[in-house]
Image (cartoon, rainbow, N blue to C red):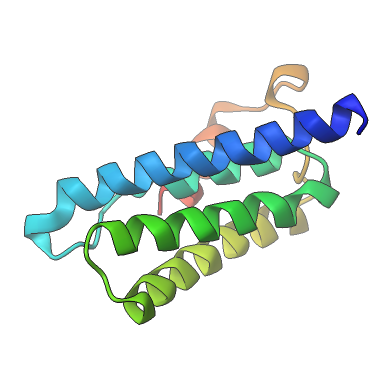
Length: 130
C-alpha cells in the first residue's frame, strides 16, 4: 500500500477515536441533564478536520464519526435504535454545516495558509458548535 493510503487510514481512525472520546465525555457530562448537550465538541472536531481535508476523504471521516457515535451511545446504555438515531442526527448536523460552508466557497481551505477575519472565525465556531 502507498504511504498516503496508510496515512489516510491512520487519520480516519484517529479522528474516529477522538470523536468517540469527545462523544463519551459529552454524554457523561450531560447524563443527569437528559443527554442532550448544549455544545457537542465531537461534531466540531470532525467538521474542522473535514474543512481542512480533500473532498474525497469526507465520506470516510463522516463514516468513522457515525460508527464511533453509535458505539459510544451503546456503551453508555442506549438501545441500538436510539444510538443510531442520535448518531444520524449528529451526521445531519455535520453535513448541514459542511453544506453551508461549501456553498460559500470555503470548503477545503487551510486555516494556516489563508488569513480569515475574526468575524468569519466566530461564524465558523458558532456553526460548528451548534
